[in-house]
Length: 264
Image (cartoon, rainbow, N blue to C red; front, side, top):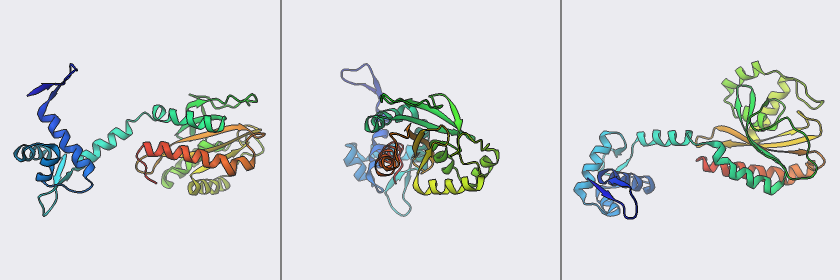
């Protein structure tokens, strides 16, 4: 049986609509719920709620709590929720936050992910400052991970068993006098980044360019992306980095992470 929504040309299947309403109640309840409570909150009669719960249970969407008559969401709902999170377009989701970031610091900001031992830049918003330095990073481009703030953050978020394999392939090419080319020193740098959740690039890829990057984490606490702020060392001084910019970028990265379901 279907019904017409007022003012729309959309028809809904009544049984499906009712089942989804039950799932919504269970998702916000915080604890298992009785059939009577579900009937009251959904404004359905008990027999209807019971029939729908039986079908949802058979399909794995809800479960009856052991030793009681209460119901809760099933593991299949957990899997569906995970699938929805993984299908989230990180570039689209992060864009408003990148715009906020550039408004707060007026320096070039980037969104990047890790592909093997390289950084892939998904998005970039350039600074409107008069003095703009030339940087290799552009949306759609790739870059070395060992000498970039975003690369360090992303590598630091890789599980240690997988990180060793990546580091074996890593070419520690020297771009400036500040580039870290010693693998053991670089491992210590990654450990520091892992503890802080942010990283610096103090002229390691491009002379006169400084960068700070922070980790973006998903609902499981895994680092899936990094955001970074880059600019000339004349503006991004040590004082500005440590007393203002780190707090700003970590704050914005945490906002994106929260949107992805991460709870620090």
